[in-house]
Length: 394
Image 1 (spheres, rainbow, N blue to C red):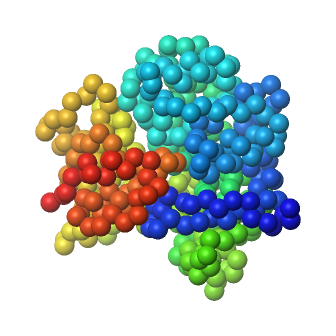
Image 2 (cartoon, helix red, strand yellow; image 1 turned 90 degrees about the vertical axis):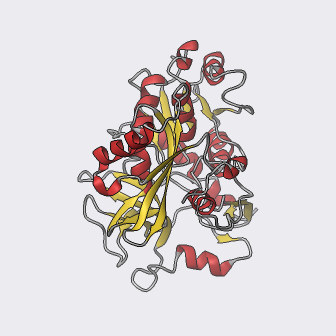
Image 3 (tube, rainbow, N blue to C red; image 1 turned 90 degrees about the horizontal axis):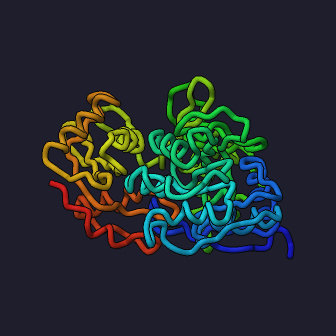
């Protein structure tokens, strides 16, 4: 095969609309999934690598199949639920197979948090030497719990940031990188990733902007299947006149004073409350930092005075009952963490929220359903039944 012959077409989950057919090619896909896996997780011949992803989405392609097998690594595959017959299932699999490196989604981590601290103790998981997460930004509370309960409070937990379109990690720590909970740290060597404002200027520390790349890499997407116009518009048009060839990832992030990235979510996942811009992920992380909350999704509801007000959908930890007094308690907790402007106007309790197969919360779907609008294409949702449970908001 020629290096540019198409290897596969993988449809994204459509967090921003109709799913897109991402085209990847033979040559590049044999290079950076393997190289970045070796860099970030230091895979050795005697490792047992377990990426818990579904093989049908990009993490399964890159880091269950192509990356590990190109390296000649032992790659675990398990088809089944993490909670059947009970929540000890994963831990018993780790013990039985002496898994040394575990790579999973923040959604799974929060699910185990919700289930309780007792489950990791039901098997010997001391074979683990390194942890990782993928699929969406991990909030600091979940990162710390994961490190403490899976990693005995001492293992590195590698938060990796990338996309279906990139085919491999772009922003991620190396095993020697000092970590900060909730941050994927820095761009990997050779990946010229930066954060720009709307005028193509690098953002100062503490400010948010758009994640971009100024140079290509081997496993980047080559096209949208039968949709060249949308491909050019979504990834190349925004900065073309100022910085030709700049790839727009479609996600926002901030850099701190040390240059560490914090991923805020999709460009269109930003709340505008009384003139202030707040990322949905910031409010969700503040909610999850409450001891009774396992997971949260936040949307903006149109408001004539403030522009938008914040509405939260909260999943409580196992054993915690929803109650009226808990609603203002959670709202006040967010205000204490983020300030008055982030105060949720309404808190709803739900059993689940719509997610992609990679664990990303589908805020577009939640907002449409909550406001009584058409939800659009939900064919790639991991849990389509959760859409009907989203209440209409007043």
